[in-house]
Image (cartoon, rainbow, N blue to C red):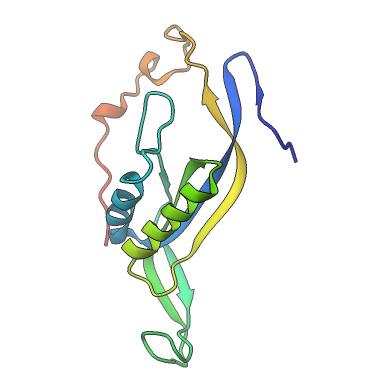
Length: 151
């Protein structure tokens, strides 16, 4: 793997941490508010940058010692999503973020993962005339219908 960042004409590839967690869709705003209170998740001229997957089904079975008590049947919980965002490569900051996710999460054993990655950061070049940019196409994200969350 590439162990250091590099640059192209338009982009810097930086060593960052990719933080991913799974949660019920209805919990995400509360968890992300706790995260952004610690780290603004800035990317260029944008903040609060994160990705949330479509709803899926989480599968698990509580064992002895679980808050729900031991069960014999496998549970299937619909409406679970995966959220990911990037942080600077800073272990102390990552520890604070993990603790914030844990405290804001509704689960006894939340799924939280951290991976080192190379991530792109624009150099902020003037590309107003680029025909591929959303502002030069028929798409306008500000006019798009809002996404509805299912709890």
